[in-house]
Length: 215
Image (tube, rainbow, N blue to C red; front, side, top):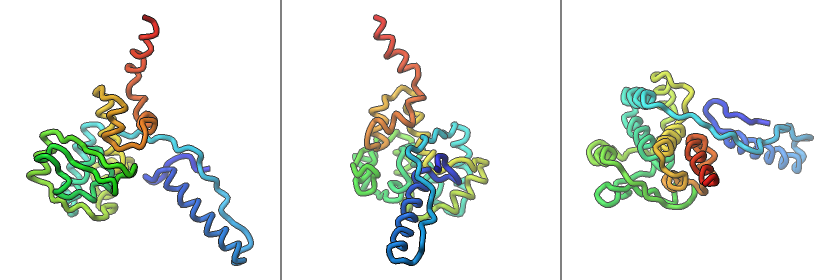
């Protein structure tokens, strides 16, 4: 069974491809085009949560590398993910109309959110200033090639774009924000998903919670 990520792709990514291949060969069997299904790999029952977060230095390195790219909007997309925790699909759909209340919030549409639920993400002054003065709002592009070049330039070939979102979530948790609030900001479908990725960052919080039992 495939149980680990490879080449920057998640286990579920490979599992989905395996399912499709098995269905194709099963259909071919029905049509008597083949005499057996060669896909014997079983999909993983559970994906191990990836725990790669960027340090402040690494964040600076990747943004600098992206700014050197000929793909001028690349650094903006990286910056937005690091500062809002938005998924790449959500970033691609951003328009000026999504900036609410004088750029105080950015709205993520239910149509682009993985959970199919809309959410509002508050923006700190630094990010508000970015959207007002620097954002091109030209993000609906495939950035895979440019992103790969930037990762190599920064010496961070082990990271994937989704790690930027995880970095945002980890920063919140490490600063004492509850898993419930982080879950809402990231647009997770349940707090259980948030806990799977970030609960290990708050051992002291759990220790304090258990100390209540001793009083």
